[in-house]
Length: 186
Image: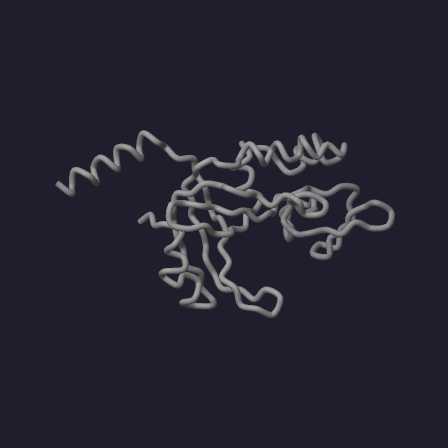
């Protein structure tokens, strides 16, 4: 069942069980994407595709320019960048902050990887081209499935929403569903 963003607060989502998140689906528009994080809207991940890392764990750059992974204890000449950024979504009921991770960001950015954005823009200091990738996604409408959970952030409990999946709005399907809903009211 699709809801609206205001349901997160109105239904106290994220407060019910500290160990289990609540889930919500809604249609909303990106109205701001936070891309000004120092170093880009990504983190450097381990290039090890196998266990235990699977390209997910953060690596640290060493003094010699290599990347070291604490998880697998490997040192590599390169890293794999993974998107991670915050955004605000809005609908006609409210606005909310969400966290975006690599899989969802790639859907939003039409399949472009964080490494591609880095190589084409950030590595050359072309901030305008970097911003253009994200600006293109602003004010686009999507169907979201979000996980809402209470988490400790800087010694304070906060409700945090993370995008689990997003799909472009199918306006033909949406229109047919609205017509059916209207006809049921008659």
